[in-house]
Each structure stands twice: as C-alpha cells, then as structure tokens.
Length: 342
Image (cartoon, one colour):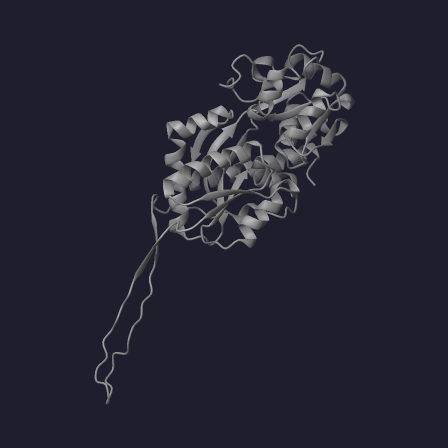
C-alpha cells in the first residue's frame, strides 16, 4: 500500500515544457541559442466527476453532494456527483479507479463496503485495496440495530437473549457478505455466542429496501447507520434498540449503546472518504487532502453533515490508508471465523 508524505496544500500542477536548441557551431547560421519555456496550469480548470458507486439518497451520496457543493465554491469549478450503482459498489469503483484517466478530474466516494469490507468478505474482489490512492476520510456514522416498531423485545439485551435461544428465527438484511450490515451482525453474534450460520441473511438493495422489509415483518433485524434509520424510526414504523460504539450517538441521545445493555466489543462503524486512481499526480492528491481538511473543519459544512446524522471526522492520506489496512485485516479475520467470506 502506498504511503503518502507529500506536502499538503499544493495548489497548482506544474507542467514544464523545455525546448533546448543546439549548442554547437553551424557554418551557415552561426551559434544557436538555448531557449526554455515554462507553462503553469492551475488545477482544477474544468469540471470534476465525483463518482458515487451507490444509488442516490444513501449516506455516501448525501455526504458526497455536500462535499461537492463546498468544493465547487472553493475552487470555482463545477464538481458533479455521478451515481454509478451496482455490484455492491464495484461498478462505480471500477469506472473511477480503472477506466478514468488519473488526472484529478475523476474522484471516487469510497467507504467500507467498497474497500475493507469488500476485501474482508470476498477472496477475490473485483476492486482491491491496492487499486485506490486514498486521499482523506471526511465522515463517520454509528451503526443502529433496528427492529419492527411493535416488536416484542423491550431492549437490546432482551432481543439478544431471544436470538441466543432462537438463532434459526433470526433474519437480517444486508446488500451481501461485503455490506457493513453483515459485519455489524457478525460482530454482534460473535459477542453473544451465536452461530451465524444458523441465522439467515436477506439480500436487499440497501436501507431504502431493507427498512421497509423490517417494518413489514419480512425481516427481523436491519443494521444501518443512525442517519439511514432515523426518519423511519421517527415515524414509529421501526425502532432503534441499540447503537454500536462506546458512547451514545449525539443524534440519538436517548438510545443506549449495546455496551450499556451488556453486549461488549461492537466496533464496526460506517465511514466515507475520497480516493483517486493510482498515478494521479501527487500535487493534485495533496491539494484534495488539504481542501478536505479545511472543509471538515468548516462549521457550515459540519452542520450540513449533522443534518444527515453523519459525524464530521477527518483523516489525511497516510492515517486514512493505515486505518483501512488495519480494518481490512480485522474484517478478513471476522468473515473467515464466522464463515461468510466468499
């Protein structure tokens, strides 16, 4: 994995064209001089594609649109969000990382599902960690455990005890073995000592598909970000009975963590960031990193993320890359142990 130690904040891409004339004697023309020219091209000078490898309306998409709006104003060039859904995030990633030119005018909205979880859940994924040059992380989301609004369990502790006694009755939703829902469920079942193979995954297209299935009684459990589950929970059609992590979500202060309810060790979280194709000039990568850092520290941008229940969190290229590598190792081990690595 590449590590990045370039200086941050480089605002220009230098393209130097050097034309050197002959230095020798010519019987007819005499001595010719040496000429050197240099052109400087500012970046960006045209529209940028910000590829979201999922459908519109999800967490990755909403964060990307907020970022595109901010950076379009910052740089004075349009940044257009392009949704290329399919293959659990691999279709859009393939386009952005392998088909597009590495010139800084195509960037990828990346998250767990098309990086660490894809590598952890599949032995030979179409998109590998090494296909990315990671620029920066810009937001995180807490996982919420969601059941039907009138489900009989009063809390997560009682629900976990029911699953321990009736694992074959547990159905849960996910976009597939590489989805963060699968890893959230796997980590929880491991913590309470339940064989994951006795439960059943129901494949869905995402939160907009899975939450209605839970509300309608077609699945027992959905695990999504707080932001994705918030609206339907507010309507009373579903109920959030726990969140992951060691502290309550700032967006759901009345919902206790799993840890508070006797289930320890739930660390899976959602995040989103930006990557670019390998071979993208270092100066452009560094300019994106600096711009994202400034953006994530901007109070107006932070407010936009909080409105969609996403926590503003920045990590630069090197830290971001190291985090993803460690996460990949953990998820690969978890998927292998729990028997859902394909």
